[in-house]
Length: 214
Image (cartoon, rainbow, N blue to C red; front, top):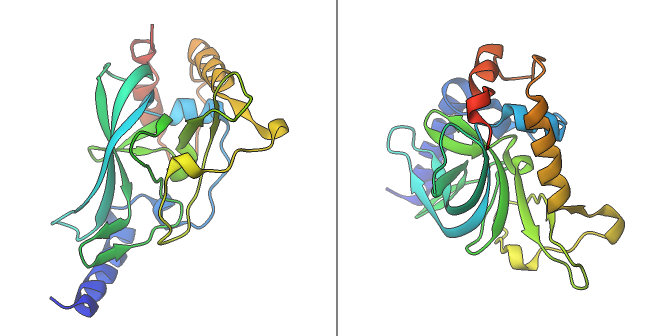
């Protein structure tokens, strides 16, 4: 199959997916603002860990490219179980002659430390609100503790978390602050309020006492 035909096939697959299978956020160029409390409520899993490997695959049923990251977990703050590792999938990426650019996709690099809010999308775990649900954990020179930050790349730009710019000191959010906010909200639990794009039944299902970390 030629590159032109493959691109055409992928474009058709995207059009079909937009109407049927791919979450709406995958096709948005902007994202509705959500608080950390809402991210906590919307997540099936909330985890910390280190990326051990990154790869892409082509879904034979849809013709869509997925970028996957295997994450070895150090902490699970919320979830139906307590796995030692998980695979996180983001729609988009390169696979052979196929190139699929998705605005807002979350990107990963090997050995990257991460804090993740993840939702179950038809059996795939993906960051809530795409790149906004994935935090890179880094320590700036002179700092005594690590901070967290989100990052959105442009299409075709390689990603390596080691070279992310450090935020200005006054703009840093530290990992301990994010952890504490998530833990405090898990203690209070979901308040019954709706979150756009998520059914109330699903929110009830994923916010039971049993799913909180002890």
